[in-house]
Image 1: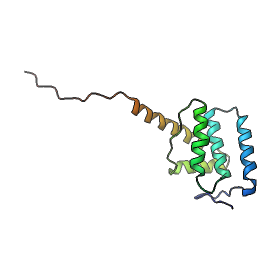
Image 2: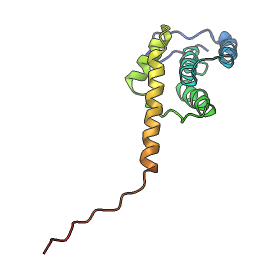
Image 3: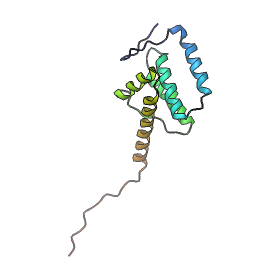
Image 4: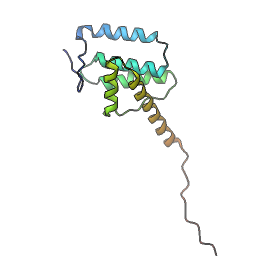
Length: 135
C-alpha cells in the first residue's frame, strides 16, 4: 500500500522497493566517515524520504535511528519538538539535497537535551530568607 507524507509534496518510493532502499541506506551508512551528528541527521532525513511505515516514521526515525546512533557515538539523545515548522522545513530541504538545516535541527535538539540535563543536575539552591534588620 502506498503512503503519503502529511504536509509534504514528496512521493515516497513504491512499497515494493522500500526494503531494498532501506538496505541500501543502512549499508551506505555503515561506511560513513562524516561527523556522527551530520551522518545521523542525514540518514534520518533520508529514511523519512523513504517513509517505510504507514505510521510512526518520524518517531521511529528519531528514536531508533538518530538517537541510538548519537548514543552509540557518546552523544546525548536529541530531544526535539517535531511539530515545529523548522523540523519539517529542514526535512523538505533534505528532500531537495540540502542537509544543512536538518543537521542544524539535530544540533538544536542536542543542545535542548543538554539544557534539560543541566537543569536537572544543578545542585538545589538553598532558599533565601530575608536578612534580619541591623540594629
